[in-house]
Amino acid sequence: RDLSISLEKLGDVERLAAETYDDQVTQAAAHYRARRDAMLAALAANMPEGVTWTTPEGGLFIWVTLPRHLDGAEILRRSIAEAGVAFVPGGAFYTDGSGRNTIRLSYSLPTEAQIAEGIARLGKLVASAA
Image (cartoon, rainbow, N blue to C red; front, top):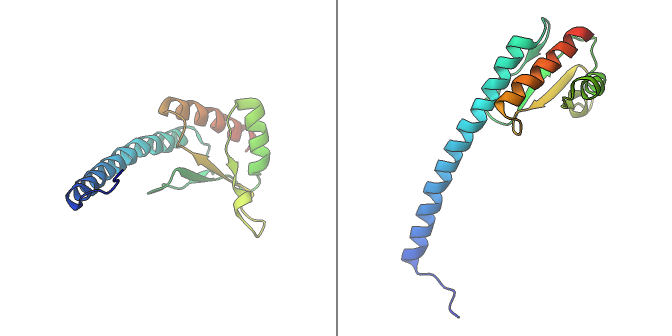
């Protein structure tokens, strides 16, 4: 069996792959931009004063900085038990022991409606802890 491909066919395949790839990247960027924007809007609407966050230009995460006296790991424990919302405590990303009052939120998996609901629940919990 001859599995070789002509140079002409190879060029067609490469061109199709490049066009498809660009379209996929464009669609994915729009999809995740909408989720990012939904999370940013939910944070602005629900987080108490003293909480700040990043506005990512890429990636799938928003970093949130809580008031200094709050511990992201403790907020996670309460958030899972009381609000059914999970995230990654930011302290795990710091080798020097800092970052205890930060959390990393992902907008890759939840829908925009789930983001709005989850951030509303998390905002109430953070407000009660602050």
